[in-house]
View 1: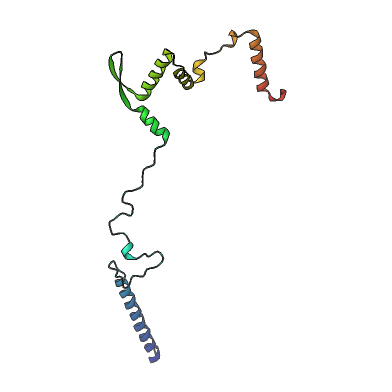
View 2: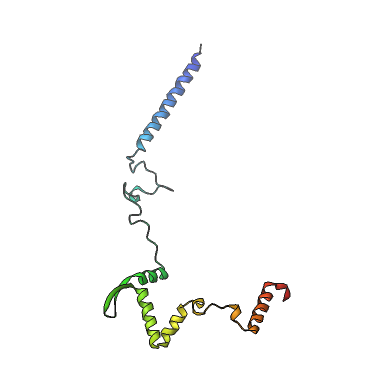
Length: 158
């Protein structure tokens, strides 16, 4: 059996815990979804309520901006666009790149030096030169090529 002093102590601690729990319940009720300005504490990570976003409103309404196009992609898109040209009295639809290349070739044929230079600069070097067969070369040329190939193949002979 417990003495009267122990039972009084237990009763007092129960009353204290009931009081603490009641305070916590009130705090939880106060800190619910209906927060009032009186019990809202402003501080680090807790901005004033009047400056926070409204519920259901995005903080970034227009979304992430699209990436900018580079100059090369802009030129490529413009060259892929279709245009209508007239050739020999007939209209046909071609890309701008095709129209530019055909105009460049026509001007080169007519003798425009700048067009010929531009066309030559656009052409890859291997497409302009005919393939070389070693058997067709003169004997001296063949020996020179073989000598150079041996020299570059074996770096110790330098």
